[in-house]
Amino acid sequence: MADRRTGGQAVSIGARSALSLTALSALTALSAQTPSIPDLTARMTAWTAITGYERAVTDTLLTLLPGAARDRAGNVVATLGRGAPKRLVSCPLDEIGWVVGNVRDDGYLTLRRVGRSRSPLFDQQLEGHRVTLFGRHGPVPGVVAVASTHLQRGRTASDEPFDVDSAFVDVGAASRSEVAALGLEILTPVALTKVPLRYGPEGALLAAPVAARRAACAALLEAVLAQPRVKGTVLVAFTVQSLLRPDIGVTALVHLAGPVDSAVVATVPSRFTGTPVETVSLTQVDSVRGSLLAWMEGK
Image (cartoon, rainbow, N blue to C red; front, top):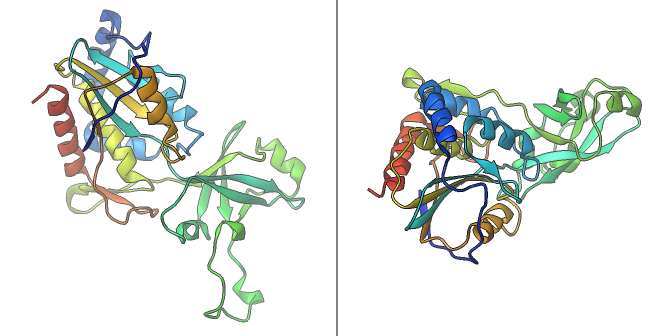
């Protein structure tokens, strides 16, 4: 967990006051049914929440976390306990992804990236890989085309590396009208198709795009469902649009919630970070869950 202190104007969260008895009863029932950390982490790493397009994921979280509500910025927030001190624990939901930039007459789609990547080669992971497009009628499978080696004389050191402008997505359509019939249009979100993979001794490792972020949120969700005996008031937030500048979700959250005495961001270490095989240790995920639980209880 990363610790930080913050403040802001005191503004009531309204419906996000202490959990009601009804919500607590529902939370108790759900807690007994909650999957294990490995299962929940695998489930959440299969989610897609491109920054600015997190609605489907936040809808799911609202069903998993009784008593939580969506604030005006789109964050999912629950309030545990009451009184002082007032503390905040959060995890970012969103991820870098792409949107449809144009629909060509021949049915191919071009892309634009959403979110800032630290790696100039980030878009190379698209080349030749399956993607999922989240259209108006539901998810649509596609694949990013690869330049034909039979029509080229070979690559040279001066060739430009693959980037987002090189990506042409094939969804099996041969015209604009066929693309529209699939429920796809400009600004439809696009992500690598996610198939979380457990591997290593006894399946102790899990690989998937954005695995660390999803694992951190899984640890936080498990900690909340354990019904901690919180010290004072704990605001639990699953935040959106963290990859935009400024961090819109957290900025809005602090403004709405008012000053807090301390805040932590749930984090899980990872290997191969930023790649389609970003890997986390499920043992470490469970350790973060325990640390979050202890922090909420003021231990």
